[in-house]
Image 1: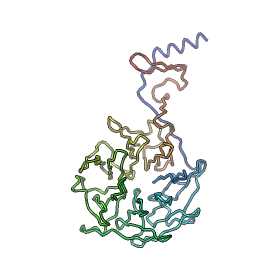
Image 2 (image 1 turned 90 degrees about the vertical axis):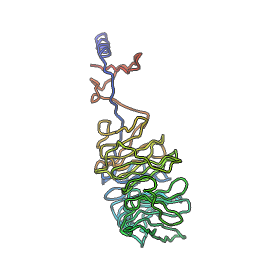
Image 3 (image 1 turned 135 degrees about the vertical axis):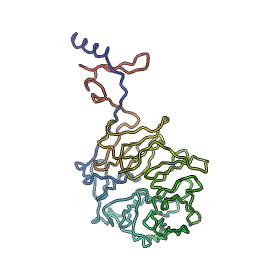
Image 4 (image 1 turned 30 degrees about the vertical axis):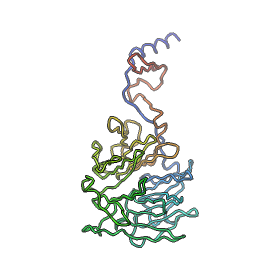
Length: 351
């Protein structure tokens, strides 16, 4: 015992002031039934099920296993581009081959008519009146439900060349306003008509692939190369630099439980802090740096869709951080912890 205590004291006297940190992630893949590991989009429905859209199939996670849905279960296409739950509880799945809604333990394909399918990760939205908005290869499409039937109309544009433009995204904000990426512009729906607002609001010409409002009333828009925010009460967007371009990752956005912005990139997950951007990558515990999707569930857990590595759940988000021998400890077996007068943390290991 004396020799063991002496060893601990020696290590403590030479302990390192640790600066690195690691987070804990649980990875879900083929063993849990997720047979395609290229995750593109995530959704939690009001029943608590987690829906995972991949490049080859849609999966529903019940907390134990993933249940697969494909063309045999009514989906018009295998590659899932968008997922959305409308206020009436309907789960919608968008593919480039068409639109489907979940009903009776399978999907029902819906004929859009005026377009082929959904082309954006942020490609489906809905409002309090039950209207469904779709980002399609022919621009923005509005779906109206009458009983069990859906009718669709395409929003016309007076801009030259708009007939050939895809809608890059669509979003309904807290005030019920519909924003969408229209070609290389940002547009807003006003009285059922398109209004191009990017130029007057200070945005450059980019396909705005993601639009998201935060808890403070700010509106964020993201393209392949840039991120902008319009502060609540402001008429103009301002650039938020410092993020890597989306070389491999499709531009998406999400919020964490504190309302901070989460931005998937091909260099890891970018998290907004008071000092700028924090990048969580393989050095902090992720199995890959290429993040395609991120979502906060109703319990406050953060889920990450990984390109080629399946699904990750961030354990103890904002609660637990870990350090190991990869971060400077001589060994993972920790025997003693103390903090000195300079607020530095000292850790004693066995050797």
